[in-house]
Image (cartoon, rainbow over all chains, first blue to last red; front, side):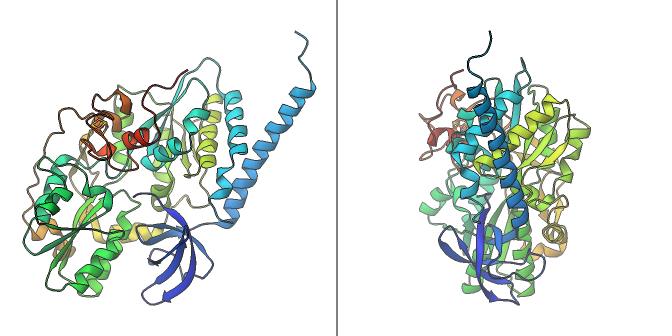
Amino acid sequence: MCLGIPAQIVEIVDPRAKTAKAEIGGVRRIVSCALLEGEAQVGEWVLVHVGFALDRLDEEQARETLQLLSEMGEAYEREQAQIRASGEGAA
Amino acid sequence: MRYVDEFRSGELARALAAELVETMPPGRELALMEVCGGHTHAIYKHGIDELLPAGLELVHGPGCPVCVIPVGRVDDAVSLALEPNVIFTTFGDMMRVPGSKGSLLDARSRGADVRMVYSPLDALELARANPEREVIFFAIGFETTAPSTAVTVLQARAQGIENFTIFCNHVTIVPPLKAILDAPELRLDGLIAPGHVSTVIGSHPYDFIASEYGRPVVVAGFEPLDILQSVLMLVRQLAAGRAEVENQYTRVVREQGNPRALEAIEQTMELRESFEWRGLGSIPKSGLRLREEFAVWDAEHRYNVPGVSVPDHKACQCGQVLRGLVKPWECKVFGTACTPESPIGTCMVSSEGACAAYYHYGRNRPKRA
Ligand code: SF4
């Protein structure tokens, strides 16, 4: 129950009550945006937990993390390739 | 961008795992605690444990909100549910947790009106729709969940809904971590900190773990690559002899957390003198209750709550599981008398419980070296 799930805001239901409709893994449900800074916007990604948007997901940061991950992957592949190319070694 | 699939690449996972092998300080055995039950679940679901190098062990922590509720509090909930005219609402997982006189599900079969809700707001809505009834919401969870309860209480007040109360069992994450770090029986080299709790509280509250206990901490996301990257970040710190708080989950967690969520908690709740935890005993200033000015919405104020401490079932080792001292398969009743269908302890009930994760994903014996 403690899991938060990434969801996309698809519709603002009631700006005064701070409710919006979010698509959570293919299901649409009304969530409260009372914990978000400022107004929720359609298209924004948020983390939903027990019916509340707990915070926004930072797209820029997500990209950076993925970039870092893929660089780690690439560095490893390169090293592997070098090892393969070096043959069995001297000893 | 979907924030999920991108963080599940099997190819990258293997690359990270290989890098881990190379980063491991030679000849050392490392034990890292994943504090959060959500991480425990993800680790077994995605088989991350099988990608880890020899000599690196993951120890499961106390961060499962259902698991840490002691038997006495379940009994209190059952007693509240049996009050006349009450609709007792709870998250699904709490329904099956056994108390000393049965679970909430058993109470329902004895005539109590117990209903499952997904959100505290659904419980408030029930109160609005049933003005002649009294609706109680069984509030559990760490700082991740407390703000939702807080906002719900504020809405009840704003809308003048007074047939609605909270049975408040919210807990905070730092005191049990301190208790675990202070315990002499367990040696931990580093901590994988709970990502979603940190969304609310930020990464600052863990600073003492690095500065006072000299252990590295990495705040981690919940996808397989998040967890693997966090483990790698911890091992890198350990290999370099560093102990710092790092944040892997930058797409959601900021250093200062979510100020609005913290403010909602602060406005409505205060720390109890002490709160009893399953397996960890009573910990001072570790549980939250509603402030005096919200007494109208406080079930402990409006009803007679037994409030008696009740020992665990004799066979149950949840306490040791929650402190990382015992692996689920070491418990004598694991998978035999205790299964998700008929649980003896909490750790088998919630999907975030270590026993349930081991059971569902077939980890019923020690990993082969
Ligand atoms: S197997 Fe059941 S009784 Fe044993 S520790 Fe796990 S939940 Fe508790």
